[in-house]
Amino acid sequence: MNVADSERVSSALEHLGYEFSPRIEDADVIVLNTCVVRQSAEDKAYGRLTSLLPVKRARPDVVINLMGCLVGVKDNQPLRKRFPYVDVFSPPSDPTPLVEYLLERDARSAEDAETARRFALMDGDLVLPHKDLDNQVSGWIPVVYGCSHACAYCIIPYRRGVEKSRPPEEIYREARSLAAQGIKEITLLGQIVDRYGKDQPGYPSLAGLLRELSKIEGIERLRFLTSHPNWMTDELLDCVAELPKVMPHIEIPNQAGDDSVLAAMKRGYTADDYRRLVEKIRTRIPGVSIATDIIVGFPGETDAQFQNTYDLLAELKLDVVHLARYSPRIGTLSERSMPDDVPAAEKWRRFRAIEKLQETIVREIHASYQDQTVDVLFEDKVKKRWRGRTPTNKLVFVETDAELRGRILPVKITWTGPWSMLGVLVD
Image (cartoon, rainbow, N blue to C red; front, top):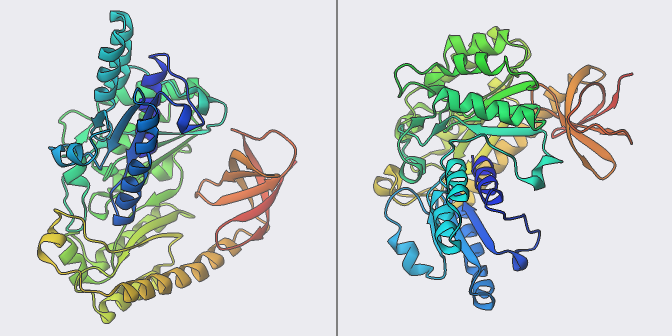
């Protein structure tokens, strides 16, 4: 989501005549786009913001814009007092405050102002920043902003606001614009992406959105994230199974494998519910890959409860596990009412245990690709090897001098490891 937001603000700035600067010391405008989903991310944002003070002192005319979840959608007076050298504070996904500030400061023409405002308000086609045009193969389109689910540990509803689906025609227009610029793969984004349209009567479902987007010429692959177990419908699974452009990869967090912990998290389902959903997904979409999120060390999580999570993962053998150690986010239900009582060392032990388990599982899954031929969309070159992804989102490297960026080619897998695979192009 932050990548998509950053592209939007870059596009708006380029329409005001600004160009990307590779050196922060040479920039006229500095945008720090922030994430606070974990404490480490928030700490990093504060550190980076503090490091910009010498730049502002050396060049008082430089415009510093703080954007994203650190700013949030509510009153940010404490931030303004703490960082008085920041010129503009922008909520998540909203470059409007920065655009308005620059328009007023630079006394731009009415035509420039109107164009910039259209891009800031997402009322125009997204034109990728020039720094991305020659390199980018995949694009991201937010389709649902905010979230109204309010899991006990999650800060997103407080920082990004209530759930709001974007108009479908706006999404189609943006997708066509990306396709015209050479983008081959689009990922639809939402905190609970499969709730798209449920807040707006008359909007299509996520499946309906994907069916329309699959008709756009030039777009070869479609993905979506992140889903919620309670909103993963049969219609959406049928869409993935039936549409060649919708990739067989599902991001569906379960967060824990113990019913008591899930209830405390306010997730709204049980471990058995999740188990049955995984079985349904695999039955409906043969060969699908499934990714999940897991939080270890949630308040009150006992050894036995953690073991239930471990055992569920060992049983389901999912393709990807995004791991996090619980950290309290100020203002959330868990921070207000649940003591952070699992010691840091124990959180790390549980983290490492699942990490080790998952390495074994993924090594086994990837071994099944040995000597198989798969289609790979190539993204970029890392040293001498081209990097790309399979339909199931597996990372594949191929060594060749040929220009592969943006091409989908058959690759025979010659080596597999837990995190990536190697292959050769098939003639």
